Each structure stands twice: as structure tokens, then as C-alpha cells.
Amino acid sequence: MSRPQKVRRPRNPIDGWLVLDKPYGLTSNDALTRIKRLLHPEKVGHAGTLDPRASGCLPLAFGEATKTVPMIMNGRKVYRFEVTWGSETDTDDTEGAVIATSDVRPDPDAIAAVLGEFTGTILQVPPKFSAIKVDGARAYDLAREGAEVELEARPIDVHRLTLVEMRGSDRSVFEAECGKGTYVRALARDLGHRLGTCGHVTELRRLLVGPFGEADMVTLAELEDAAEAAGDDVEPLMDYLLPVREALADVLEVPVSIEEAGRIRQGMAVLLRGKSAPLACDLAFASHAGTPVALGSIDKGRFQPSRILHL
Image 1 (cartoon, helix red, strand yellow):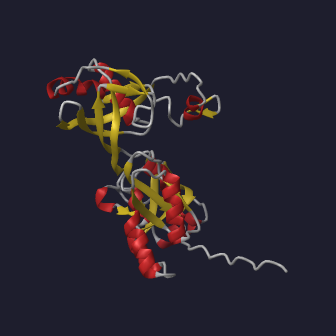
Image 2 (image 1 turned 60 degrees about the vertical axis):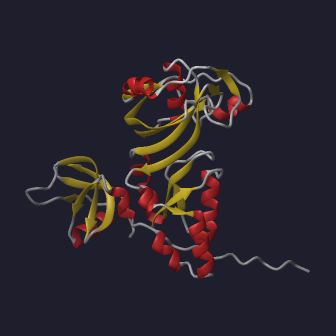
Image 3 (image 1 turned 180 degrees about the horizontal axis):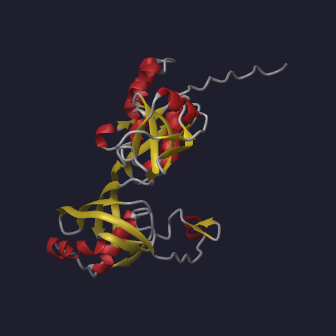
């Protein structure tokens, strides 16, 4: 007797952004898998991972929004994190083994005096337990195998680093606004070294990624409750999605006519008209009636599409 065929649920053609408040203890991919079970999207991806021991802003892109993921990943990020002084771990957070200790506990004045050294464009050596590739392998895989991992210092941008509060003498809470490629765990490690002690991250929460902040976040529990109430109807969950154009807040917008939009959708360049029309721009998006049509560039007053947005 043949086994009954398993009926596959049809995928939903969803376009937009969902800003998940990822809970502590869950990997970004696990969180994404749970969202897939709720929405059954045709296409989805996330804009930058969060460590399992971090919580907060994890933007998820659906459908045509996946074409705007680079704009989000290249945007600024804001983290709030707690550093516990007196011990350093091999992972620079609570997951690793303690590799150094110190009796020194920095006071607020000492901390404030060195924060300026960690702002602007600075050089940072990433943690050994990071996703950076070394000879084709992830650094964290090599570190877990016991290999000696040597990572080179890289320039990063830290736009703001502030001391938020002291929690006794052993713990300090900071807020950092930084660019792509910054490791908060490494900031904690290096702050400890500069202050003549040791330190590692014991709490980490991402508050903002590009244009998406805490006001945009929705929790997994809230989504799962809404999905249970809606049954097989996915439509009520659409209220949690943000439009694709939300990711383009910092990108130059060039409005075009319906005829020009048609040519752009065929991959053709169009001449931008009007006194205020830009002559050149490395990244812009064309829109018609407020709806994004395509991403592209502008050269000599002509918009050249590179990625068509089917919205």
C-alpha cells in the first residue's frame, strides 16, 4: 500500500519588512524558521544576524524587500550592552571559558575618560569566536577545534559610545551607535584592557538597525498568538509588516511618470527632467505615485535601473 502524499501548504506572495524582537537564547535562523511556519512566505531573509545570547532588532525581509537588504545591513546600528569587569573569556561573552582575571574595577570617571578613544574610525581585532572566514573556514569553527586563530585589526566606525549606568562596582551598561562590522564583544574586551582590567559582555540588546527601531519591533509571542487566533488566515498578520520603501529612507528618491516607470521596468534608462533633477548618484530609487519601481544609479542625469522592484 502506498503512503498518502503529504499536502504542501501554498507559499504566500508577501512583500515587506517585519522587525522582530528576537528573544534571548534563540539563533537568528531559528527565529526565521518560526516566522516561516507562521507566514509561509515565498521568499524571506534577515538583515544581519544576532548572536543567540543577544536580543532585540532583527529585520526580516519578505519578497521584493529582500532586494533592499543591503541598505539595511549597511545602516547604523545601536546596541545597549552590559560589561562585567574582572574577567575575560575566550568568546568575550558569557558563553566562553575565563582566560584572564583582574581585581581592578573602573569607576565612572575612569570609564568616561577613555570613551573618546573608542569613537570615530578605530581599528578593532574581531573576536576569535566570530563568523569571519580564515582560509575559507569560519573563525568560530577553527576556535572550537582548538586552532590558534589570528585575526587582523580592521577599521570600524563607532559614532557614539556612552556610559548609561553603573550596576555596582562590577558591572557597567553602555550604549553604542556603530557601523557595519563592529563587534560589541570586542569593544568590551578592549575597554577592559584600556582600563587596566578585564571585561566581557554579559547582556546585549540591539535597539536599532538602519531605519528600524524599538517602536517597529514585534515579539515572537505576539505573532504566534495572532497566528493562533487567525487560524489558516494569514491576512491579519500582514498588519505587522512595514512597506518595502521603509528600507529606503536614506536613499535618494526620484519620482517618474507612469510611462517612464514602464520603461524602467523593462531595464531601460530614463532621462530625469526638471531643474532639481540630480545629475549623478551612486544609489537611488525611482518611484511612481509613491511606490518604488527600481533601484539604480544616476549618471549625467539619466537613471539606470539595476534591480527592478515588482510592487
